[in-house]
Image (tube, rainbow, N blue to C red):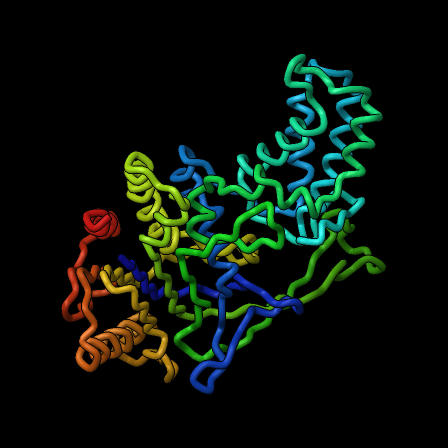
Length: 398
């Protein structure tokens, strides 16, 4: 089953997602420059939103960071508490940290700074698995539960270990359960010690349905301790400008429910694990759709506070896994008229394009749920009085 979410959302003047020069990101679409919010920006705002954090509280959530080795070091120190001196534990932990950097690439090349060259999406179980591997193979004696030998001998043994060979060990290559957010957004790794995960969620770059205009906010900063009437310190202490724009954005997301389930279940699912994953799905997918609609990027929000809710949301449930974006409804930039504001004109364009696509291609859907703050309808959709009703109706198909 495929769930597609189409959103029209008008943002007030803001700079939600900027490029390396500080300008709002943009693109050319339909031969016209449009404002853009990158897919990566949207995914992060959703993934770290309070809505998703609450939904993932029971099942756990992953961490995206270069500091995986530090997490392993902390785990090793915790496990060695009371089993050796703090100095010995610290020495062993530091070596484990450096060795972990060799998991960042298939060559096993290590980095002395203790950080991986790129961020990685990992779970607490990943940290535990790697930490336990070092502890069981090199550090702890299973009989006494103390150190296998002198700390300096253990450190030497660890240092002599080739991480390229470690990655191929059965303990690390075997499949490990992942958290729902990794199952949704996927991960790509460059190590044999972690398995890649194909994302079950696709997120398009959001583009403005209208032509983009760059604006500049000139600002000054005045010293609070400046003496009134002091000619030498008169004027501003600082001057600058901030670039911003505004627009009505079209956002598109798709969720492959079976793909999510397969990612969570792994290669050897059982009937009980299937039931457990289904239960997680019924809780996570509605939260994800809610986050798509409500969570906003954080760029320059302290300066602009662009916290506007969508003008329209269309949720389509399909049996066929044939994703269809309606971005081409806005090939011609939308403009407001005397009778319709920008959001209403965008809804009109979406309605016309969707109805044309259905007529020409005969797209089959189990359900189309429609919610809008405007008094506008779309043919062959179930109109929802509130966002809560839309979410509840969607849950019926999970």
